[in-house]
Amino acid sequence: MNTKIKILAFVLLLSMLGCNHKEKKDAILLTPSLKNEFKANFLIGTALSENQILEKDTMEIALISHEYNSITPENIMKSMFIHPQKDTFNFKITDKYVAFGEKYNMFIHGHTLIWHSQLSSWFSELKDSTAMANAMKNHIKTIVGRYKDKMGSWDVVNEALNEDGTLRKSVFLDVLGEDYLTLAFKWAGEADPNTDLYYNDYNMTYPEKRQGANKLIKQLQEKGIKIDGVGMQGHWGLERPSLDDIEQSIINYAALGIKVAITELDINVLPSPWDLVGADVNQNFESDEKMNPYKNGLPDSVQTKFTKRYKDIFNLFLKHQDKISRITFWGVGDGQSWLNDWPIEGRTNYPLLFDRKLQPKPAYNAIFNLNPLNN
Ligand code: 9MR
Image (cartoon, rainbow, N blue to C red; front, top):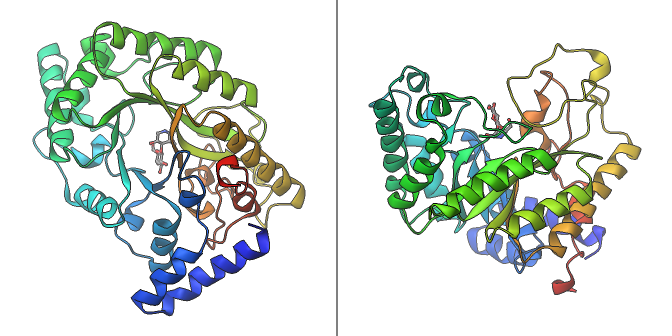
C-alpha cells in the first residue's frame, strides 16, 4: 500500500470518530494496521500508560485497538504500585488493564514480577531468607494467580544482569542468592501453568550480557524449571546496536529452544555524550540546551535515518519471524515516551511510530510492504 493511501486511510480512521458504531467498524475493517500487516508473523504490541488503560482519550483508544493486538502495562504492575505494603495489594487499575485486553481481544502481557527497580520499599526490609522467600512467593502467586488463564505471558524476572553478564546486586540476590531466579520462575509456573514465562532485560545484544543471559536460562532449563521466552528490550539508537548484533542475539536465544520477544522497542534520536547505553533509570544528567537539539521538530536528515532504522530492523524481524513471538513498542505516540525524560529531563525525543498528535510518521509507512507473506 502506498503512503498516500495509507494517510487517507488514517484520516478516515480519525474522521470515523463521529460515526455511529456500525459505520465505524466497517471503516476500520478497510484501513491498514500494524497488527494486520504482521498478523502472519508476530504479535504487535504497545505499552499502556494508566491514562490509556482508563480510556481517557477516545481517539487514542481507537488508534490503539486498531493498530495493536498485544499490550504491556508500562508501570501499573510494578511492585510499588500493585503491592505497596506487605499485606496490601492494589488491583483496581490492574484489573482494568486486564479488562482492557479482554475488551479489545488482545494478547495480555504482565510486566513485571521481580525487579530491583520501582520495588516496594518493604521488600528491602526483609533480611532473613525465609521471610524474603515467603514474601516473593506471596507476591508472585497472588498476582499471577489472580489473572490465571487471562495472561498470555509474564516478565517473571526483569533486568537481573549487569552489562558484564554477572548477576546484578539486588535485595533478592543479597538475601536468597542465585536461587531467587529459580524460585521466581517456579512459583510463577505453579500459579498459572498456561502462561508463558519470560526473562526480560536491556542490552541483550551485548556479547558478555548475552553470555550471562544464556547461562541464566540454561541453568533454569537444567533444573527442569519452566522458562518459555526471553524479552530483548529494544531501547536502541539510530546506529547501535548493529543489525548483526541484533541478528546474532535473536539466533542465539532461539537456539535455547525458547521464544524471543522484542520488548520495549523505541529508537532514541537524541545525543548521548556520555556514551550511555541501556535503560537504567537511575542514571540522570543535568539539562543542557545542546542536548535537546530537536525541540522544534526533527530535521529531515534525522527523520530519514530513523525511518531507515525501523525499516532495517523490521526486515530483520521478518527474516527471523519463526523465532519471534511478539514485537512491543514502548508507547504509542512520541509524547508518551520515557525517553523525553531520560537520561535528561524535559527533552523532546521522537522514538516511536506515531508523533505527538498521534499521526503516523514516515517510519510507520516504511515498515509496511516488507512482508513477503503479504505481497
Ligand atoms: O517507561 C517507564 C517509565 O514511565 C518509568 O518512569 C520507568 C521507571 O523505572 O520505567 C520505564 O519502563 C522501564 C521498564 O519498565 C523496564 N525496562 C526499562 C524501561 C525504561 O526505563
